[in-house]
Length: 120
Image 1 (cartoon, rainbow, N blue to C red):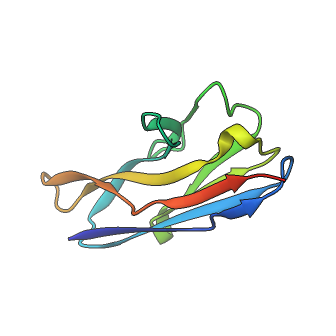
Image 2: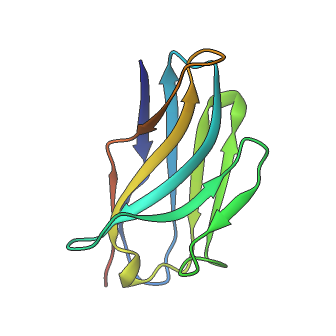
């Protein structure tokens, strides 16, 4: 099986920064796309940022210019650098990855989520 483990969440003041990490482990042949989603109380889960295996990135309009997604393919890890945080960024952040376990066997995996709270 495949496991995604997130870290780096916490409480930060408005204008502050946090860096989230998500490491994939288990039966991995190759990882295709990776991404970060978030879900605030009473709202639907939304895409924050994604990155392809080749490094192409995509961001939600609400985080463009403030968040940066990156990945280390050798470590099967994706990162989310969050700067200039706002109270509206408060949410549980989830890591997502499309993982090929073999050449033709793949699945969509999620981490357990990490809480990010932006408050003074």
